[in-house]
Length: 274
Image (tube, rainbow, N blue to C red; front, side):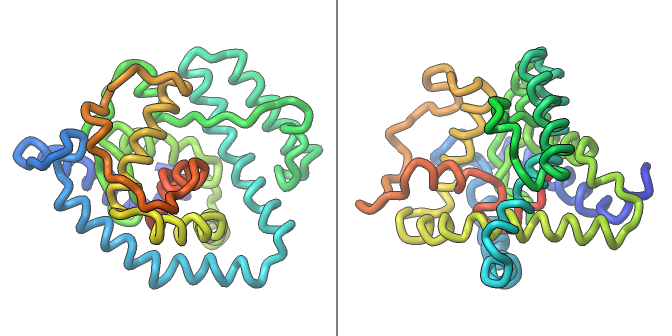
């Protein structure tokens, strides 16, 4: 195991162990939504994550937004997006999307050089579109089912397939292999705080617009992941047996972009994914 990985072995073990345990428990738990057989347990973990977010991570994101100028925050976000393009390009290739993977590699090269390690996103303006691919999507692309919906401690919303995929993403993330512990930890911490600061407005919308924030995040996450696996063209009713049973938002419902952001792991609290 690379030296850089050791300090986070407990975190990975927690995530994978939680996924395995929750998946095994799914066989003996029931509730109204077949996609979420562990809803009572998931809600408990969601509440824990929400508390950790309110106590530590949201205040850190608010302080970061307050003291760091917007143009610097945008640049930092661009840097992490650029690093993530390594995972995107790799998984595009694993899915046989060679043209897309080539575009992603070109995007990575442009922004890493001309864009100063990704601080400036020139590639988008030059016609190299930003894509979203990860190992969870790759597993889904090759026919592996999503499995039960899971809420992982600290990591947030997931499912059995995406939890396994997250481990692959972690090992493909270049930051994992920075050998200097303090430097790596600072970068990961900045990634968490930067990502959380981008979701501050979304959190407020989620709290005011959703009758049931847990169900809102769950449904948004599952729908988003389904769309990503099928490149925006999911089969009708796949993994969504009763669309009408979804909780209805309040009259001032969240706009579509807010729902998409809420579907991301960070939105329900402290997501620490690459």
